[in-house]
Image (cartoon, rainbow, N blue to C red; front, side, top):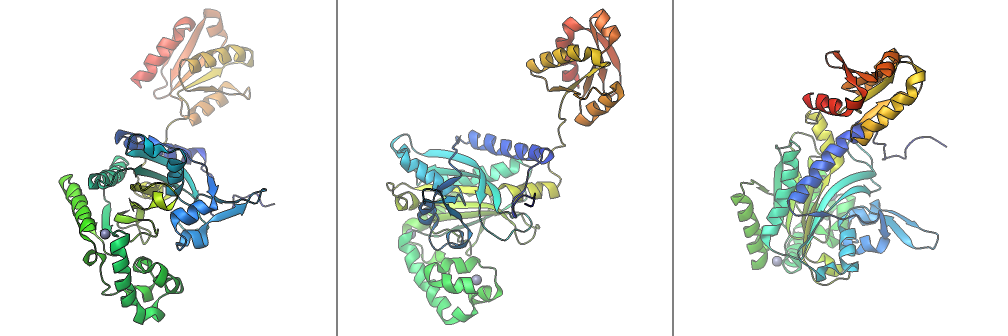
Length: 422
Ligand SMILES: [Zn+2]
Ligand SMILES: [Zn+2]
């Protein structure tokens, strides 16, 4: 057996996990300040949920799902995205019967069998939000502004917001016909995937990066010209709400998103200057999805951000905070004879809420000091013969090597105030 994480997966080691915690904390706090609460759903679901909820014709369902049969021959799938599970949960618990809208955020690993490349993995992580139970265009603006606020709080302000409307089932039908008519004489120019897509899901051809598909879509009819009055008004209201909040956006006729269930507002955030994979997140309205999955007719809207890609950009742009020390206080026993007393002191410090540690290999005081330094401790406490006799502890400030003797009985108060000065 090869002792290596499976292709497309990786370990997040402690030095990296610190960065994840930082990013996740900002995401959670920002979502909470917008009135969102966390939901945690299973990592796997019935395969059928994604077939219905993501769409039979999407790349995700046709090529990228990790599906398997369990021992009772149920077909299960590792979740490839977060929305379908939220919809299932909303319906299963009949949460639409309570206060609406329901505002959720989620975060965790997703799984897609895709070709691994820079910033793209088979187990990847998303932070997303979903709102159910309101079709107010102000809510579209709120969800978009939340996504941008998260990026701002992470120090990423150079984003571009792309915006479009993909219409409703009524006006999209009209548009599909126009688009198919435009593509029909050029089908042989399209890539293999788009030749299949073009009848089932022709909107997808618009965001294909293949040269032939780009060529075939030159001068394509834009969906704006096909929107029904209601969809036009909705899109207008979203744009107005964004503008009055001071949010600038780029209208993008090619922005159609890959999923079948989107209606009306669709949006994506790009960070310019980071290459072809510049989209770091996106979302949209999905007013038909809850019904499609077997629930009542309840509108919804959401977005997802790719955490790997955000992390990569924050690293490139040097916007991550300096690594935090692994402990604040390190206890050094000058001789193994005092290890027991050192251990008691250590536990006392921890109970007081301090991050404290010690050496467990009975090494020399010098080696223990080295260990303390590597851990980033700002104070080291020594217990030796003299300290035992006088019932004191010697405290060294690592920054300037100053030492002071503190009575054992008053050590906690002293340590806490010394750490506060630092
Ligand atoms: Zn419409
Ligand atoms: Zn194509």
